[in-house]
Amino acid sequence: DAGVTQSPTHLIKTRGQQVTLRCSPISGHKSVSWYQQVLGQGPQFIFQYYEKEERGRGNFPDRFSARQFPNYSSELNVNALLLGDSALYLCASSFPSGLSYGEQFFGPGTRLTVL
Amino acid sequence: KNQVEQSPQSLIILEGKNCTLQCNYTVSPFSNLRWYKQDTGRGPVSLTIMTFSENTKSNGRYTATLDADTKQSSLHITASQLSDSASYICVVSAPPEGSSNTGKLIFGQGTTLQVKP
Image (cartoon, rainbow over all chains, first blue to last red; front, side, top):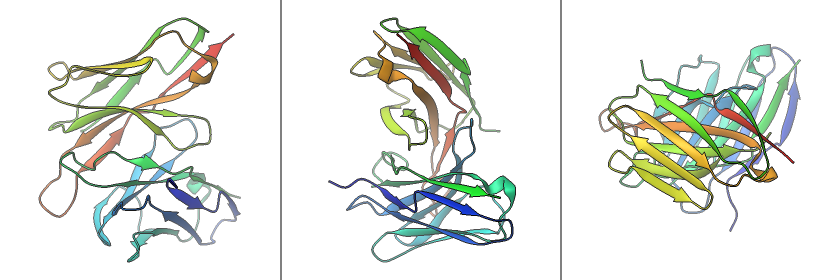
């Protein structure tokens, strides 16, 4: 069984550019969440999508946006990149159950470096 | 403010030894508490999930405990192995606020464990 997949694995951009990160959830999972993890810190919640609708948003500026497609895959877009956007971007999928969020399964992440 | 604090920040132990990692949280209300293991540059992998009614849960050499009254959790690793070297992250789940979302996960900053031969 394929787990959560993310692409690309690594990405280098310059300040002011725009980037799109992609995530494919585990088959059957309808919820996708995005996290930013700066080196040495825990992940910070960015967005959660369930059934193609935004269900949660963290404290990130409007430069960050996301969407979920009918096949439940998701894209995270970041505009006007800043040096501080350099981080590991994690995607997690879950099948919401009685537990809030259900068990989350994380992808390997996309390492974004902004120069 | 909902927070999750972990200690120690980092830990070095010898292979074969036991260790205990701590997690204190102020999240309220609270749905469940999770421990994840994250290898460098990889995504976190779930070790345990506990609801407020559970006191302990084991996954092989990993045993998590939860005291919902004092809002404390610990992760005990028995007979450590070199492959246990990783960051261990405590995550607390807050329940949904209304029907439009599915709650939120609040992450601790992690404890970096290094197991030496």
